[in-house]
Length: 178
Ligand code: IMP
Image (cartoon, rainbow, N blue to C red; front, side, top):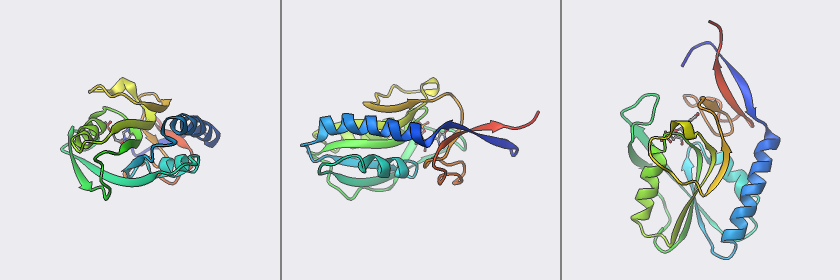
């Protein structure tokens, strides 16, 4: 990543809020009477999860998992491990994974496989952003928010080296200058 850069707004607060309302309506329709377990993938999904569940007015449970991808500096290596484990029992539950962005798909493919082995009653994925042009393994996103271009994004939970998570909108990082 260049040291000289500009942040260009890609998704405004209004666009994010509208997408979340739409996702929440679909999720409410499918999960209203199922007491689902929503699993937020740390750290990137924390803001999305917080806003999403404010729009879900039925009983649900929230848990978090944190994964670490090792071996690759800037790109997912596919060698993923769990660094913060779940507190909840997954067996028999209707599990909905809440992810910030699906890029190569390697991280989420690992997580879905990891959770499937714990025998949930059902397992689905909701992702705010999808970068399909970068996909290396097939991933089904049951509740997709936005399709985004092949650019590095920050804000609304997404970081660049731990910075910019606090921005309320999503920005593309553009190299600045020659
Ligand atoms: P994947 O394994 O390549 O799909 O990468 C998944 C993870 O990489 C996401 O959950 C994000 O935490 C991070 N990531 C992927 N693309 C971006 C981006 O454009 N900005 C910030 N983080 C990203």
